[in-house]
Length: 381
Image (cartoon, rainbow, N blue to C red; front, side, top):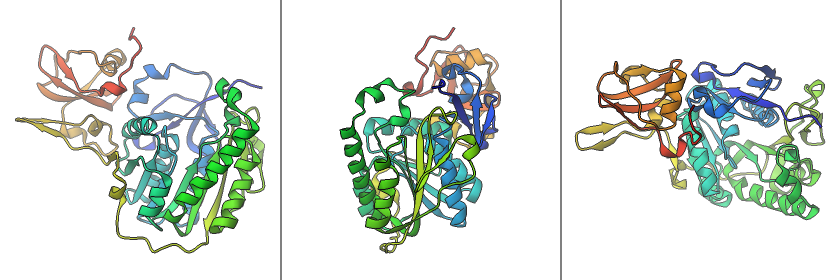
């Protein structure tokens, strides 16, 4: 089996600036790289100019865009990314929605595991779309709290992981027929729990990173029959790129496509749903929503680090200090840097014109406001 490829997906709202590569056939901003760079030492990644994502995982975004257009890309559309960490699919959905409807959408990015939800918050902040709300709720809670609220639910559910064998040796060690049965049952429970939150006529995009029929086609058929839905036809146009057509969806196998393993399919909900209430996602106690406000400490108004990373950031609101790559990396390492030509007070550090975050320039040194949890841990040469 060939070695795994390396791919990224560019952020169309941050200038399409990032490593060069060949196009991913099913992703307009996906790029397959010739070799793996040291991403951690690229300030553009920290600026949210691109997201490192497997090319096969990007196929879910293709299915989502297909269904978004089939629904007519309505203004005010509401989308749930149910099992969202670490954030690859969320950032793909956010870019697709913003291209289709501007800022007239709500994207709820949910991760039930608290530790993983923290990583998701960071990646959403770095990507910079303020229309994304991050939650950490059980699917059943979402189903009860927001009945009939979502137009599209993307469920990239936990699975037995056969598609990751080439990339993750632990997946090989942990796999067993019993694990497949366990995962298939858990996936059905997840779908049944969240199902009330999908409106009648809404779309479920269902995906896994395994090859097991019990977790893929069989589970989507189960959802259509038991929960009430009509299966949507698989994609037929990517066979020349190694994408297989299965009974209910499409299968991408490592060694046949450039990336790792992925399966994706979709259905339309035909079962009746309660009329969507007038509530909003605040009932789910979001971990993150929009751009956090500045903090007031005495006479000091301290900007939140995420403000500079937003795609809507107004660069004229603060002085910008353009720095070279070495200085940018020292900032991201949370080192003390010196900006002798910058004005006193809060400045935005930029690299190739892209904001990285804030410092408070004291003259002889700068206080670094880069979040401790996002700092580069490796030594900077």
